[in-house]
Each structure stands twice: as C-alpha cells, then as structure tokens.
Image (cartoon, rainbow, N blue to C red; front, side, top):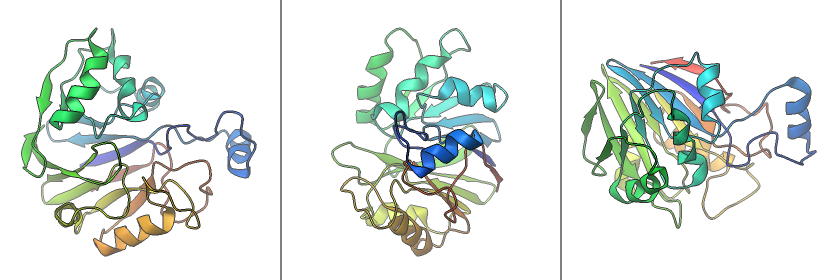
Length: 239
C-alpha cells in the first residue's frame, strides 16, 4: 500500500491569503505550501482518493495525473469535497463512498455529474479496490464526520479526519496499531478549539493508539514548519 499526502493544510491553506505571519512568509520565500488536505491511497486494484479538496487539480497534476478509481468523502465541509468537480471532462467521475448523511449532503452539489454513490455503514468492514476498509465516527461538531481504516496484506493505514480529542471508544479501537496514522492537528499546543485537536492532543492520540508512524495533517498556518511529525505536501509512504 502506498500513501501520498496530496495536501496537509486546513481550509485557508498555507500561505494564507493576506497573512504575513512567519509561517506564511517562509512559505512564500521557499516556494512551499500546505494545500488543503487530501490523500491518495494506491491499493491492489486501483487508486483511492480520500477527500477531494479545492486544490485537487493542482494536486493531481503534481503526482503525475493518476486515474482515480474511487473516492471517499469524510464529511461535508467544502475543503473536503468541493474539488470533486475537477473530474469533469478529465476522466469518468469515479464512484464515491461515504456514510449516508455525508453522501446526501455532498452529492447534491454535483448534479451536473453522473457518478456511482456507494453509501457505507459506519463500523462495518467493506471491500474496496481489493482491500478491506472500515469508516468510523469521530467528533467534529456539528458536522457528522468519519475517519477511515484500510487494511491490505496485513498492513493498516488509518486517518482520523477532522476531530476533537474525544473520539468514541469503538473508533479508537479501529485506530490501534496502525502502521501509518494521519491525524488532525490544526493549531499549536497552546491553543484549544472546540472542533479540532491541537498539536499536543494529536501527538497524544497517536501514542495512545500505538501508531507505528504518524503525521499531523489539516494544519493551519499557525503550525511551525519544523515541528516533528508534521506532514509535508507530496510526502509518500510505503507500508
């Protein structure tokens, strides 16, 4: 299984428009960025895209214009699904997997596209592209939001999606022992939000579930570039 982080930023991305903080200045000076978070997972029978960010066109071009065989939407916030329209006149729109309420909300926006809508039951394993996946609820009020666990050839990849630290116990079980965990960490450790984890909480969660390796994603422009375990756009992993 090969995982590529197409983007590692939050909704505004980094550099943030109109911002002159040290992280945004560094990004402009070095020509680096945090595009909105999206993940490419290469499985036995095809390529799965987790979330379709507003930067999807740029992200797909950067990783060699792969044909996408399936999409999973975590939740209905625009920075996680709105880029699906980039498939228009590029390839047959891939089938989308999502929980019922997420599908109902997001798919309605794309009435100009015809694509397969695959509603999946949380916490029930299902087959996708020759592998086994399970989606699970997290805690990102007020949006109904789901993480995902994918297992192939005994290896486990897990992604929390956007969430607070208090993830349901059953979902925490599904994160246990992941070979690679991507975890929401939107702000530095001295800031506390009601909808997301900060950097300290994300690292604590990764250690609690005994992830073999982890990266923080969905990071805002407030996160320094040199913090350990923070993701970089286009970083890839073989597990």
